[in-house]
Length: 226
Image (tube, rainbow, N blue to C red; front, top):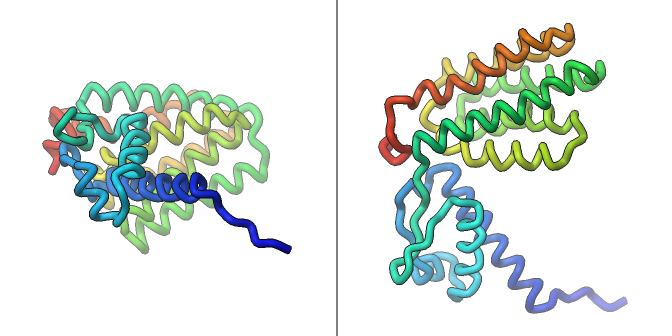
């Protein structure tokens, strides 16, 4: 049997995707901070490749609104304005409220048990392994599963994109007390969903989401946080 060989285009696509994912993670975890300037030449040297896959990866980041193009100068990691933060938090609540309404109506016992397990995992990371990346990934897993319960893949994708964009903001409020309160609110949400208490769950959800914004209302832009 002959061995499957990747075409040059497939190999190039893999390289582009690897560079894209690497840069995206550097931006989201603030290893590349807002307003950092990047050039194709510099990145080609870092990734030991030509400018072509770098340019393609950067174009994907432009699409994600994580970098901006400056003709003849290069690219800049985007800032996040206070208005952007407000809009994203408002949009996040709309998405997650839809998930909540569905869960109160249709959540099964097995789904609620899994949600509670995810909330308990949040508590473990907040208390035993206070490492921000673990806490954020665990926190997001709770919200992603709540979205998955709807069976609506578009809703899940929109929530994923929104939480990714908010991840940089979360770094600013990632102190232990805040993360622990978030864990407790996850448990509260599970209890209210199980008891079919939609209004109580909505109050908890609104506080859970708005607290991040409240921490940064006196900051004009994300770049001022560092």
